[in-house]
Length: 289
Image 1 (cartoon, one colour):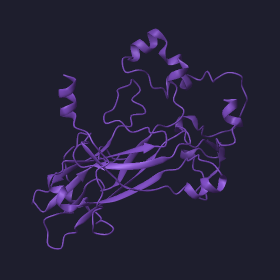
Image 2 (cartoon, rainbow, N blue to C red):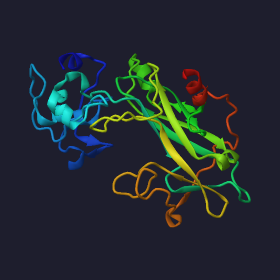
Image 3 (spheres, helix red, strand yellow):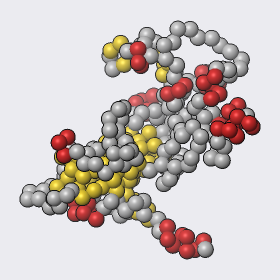
Image 4 (cartoon, rainbow, N blue to C red):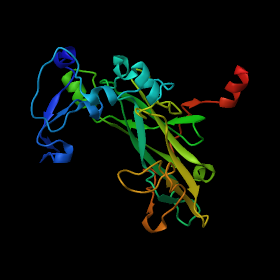
């Protein structure tokens, strides 16, 4: 909208290169729009002309894509009651999210092995839209009952400071290391992030007919190696056409031929920090009843 276009703190770019190289057709060559903090569906590819209009686009995709409808609305009800045309359900800004880089999918870590590392590296990224900034990232080794804060890095901080703004658009990176002994009784590692408006990722997803903007906890499953020497890790899915992941038909399959070994912790000493939060769901249910 015009207010957005005239706001000096809301960047809008026309991009013809990426990382110093000409855009490829897949990324929108010869020219595309780039709106930091906004979903990809608003960043038009293969741009050839622009026009200023006094009303929103009436494109089919403007109405029937990139929307989050209430969970009770299925496709039939959306058509019957005109939910697609309600402007409050359009998606513009991305919501808060995080994920883990390491341990990688189909990687393993020796816990019962001569010379085994004392700690294992766990790291990932977090992001949010609207110019907000990530203020912390946490991990849980007990299914989300307790949380431990990680070391957070925001590469954009000096840029924002130099520009005299509090707007942040880039990924933040986080890292920690965990005691190897804790992996023997661990079934999954979860991560979550919090932004400067105190938005936090939910524990579980909320169904919507388009399946969009689900930002619940990122979970890596932890499995015992068959030989008893350690554990291996399984991500939810794999990018592109790669197979594997606990959300797929190939769930629980360890591919030893392509497995990689996890990185040890940076210092070999797990951080001595109190848990950031503890959630006793059983006690909550008991109190509610």
